[in-house]
Length: 484
Image 1 (cartoon, rainbow, N blue to C red):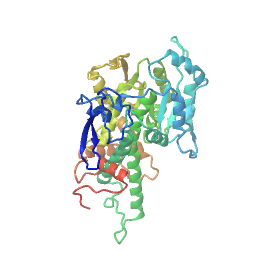
Image 2: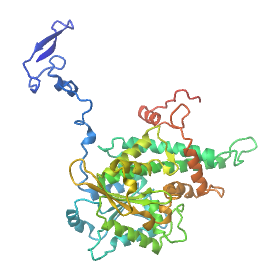
Image 3: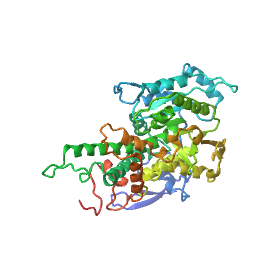
Image 4: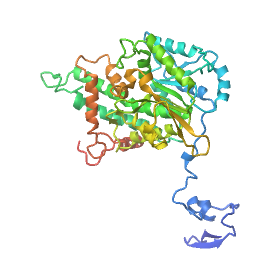
């Protein structure tokens, strides 16, 4: 084996010598770097005898860790990272709701059920302070013991993830399968905020001087303008946080599995049949019909034998419902959907809003379906599709459930379902004026705005690349060609 030695005398020349080691031998000498060089592959694998165009041997994405062996312990710790603020009257803190003897009985169920959706319900909520009526309804449902001909149904553990808890989960841990998760959550929410700010200023007239007549005799803006501007920014931030929830939804299912239910969806379900069944209300009243609807859903989840459960609305077009989604840990649909959501959040070429809401909400599910089964659109409601396991194990399964039959109209209507969190952001502000835009006005404005979004170019409203650079270097950078 020829090696290079630095020539004595400090002349800088190179003398080639031979150590006698073969290419495959492991160097066992104490050589000095740059003085004695071993075979090429020991210096760097790229200097080995054969270099492939692409090798997955050292790709960290191919070394995905196993799911947690203690998912309930982990979830209990994540959901308690909420800040612990005092709850307002009529509300109470609820982070974990467990049925009696859940832990004692779960081990046997786990042994009998190696695959499938775990007995976990994740509720994503802005806060873990829930209306007391909602907490009572959830405790009633998890404590009920149903006995049927096919045996008792499974008991679910409910975990309420506040915005602070979701942020802690996304930013407080590293994901081997999704190393871009933190960047996607940060950048995607800011990109959507920028879009909403522009839409509300240009289309809705919220916070604009000319439409409100709020100048004094000297032409200066009044406090009313400042208040409307603060409201506009708060609305944009709340809507932008939907991207964080979309990404969190996929990652928590990837890691722990279970059923994810959004707070807006939960409120709509529990208020089914009531006079205040309004998605824009801060906390709709719980009704007897709503509890029964939730009971039927949980019964369906308890009897589900597939590895994933996806609801669809079918009129006027087939769309997946993302506010309720179930999957086993490490399900391929969740993987592909998460990758698509993160790409839409990070890439400057991807818009943040389409005519069916956030680009991190419904489009990633459809793209994930195309990746696991290109003929999914022909699957009938109630049927199960099989997804081949590339590692040679059992195939994965996915059931298509009919959302039109089980879900409230607020969730199953394409007119309202994808826009629920956007509408609730506008409707939850107590300072909203009587001239606030209607639901249809909000949706129409954002749909029109979606068609003219532009993220690439000197006059783009927002650049994820620039945002991340600003964050990393700690200073503001200016886009090339932009005029202040």
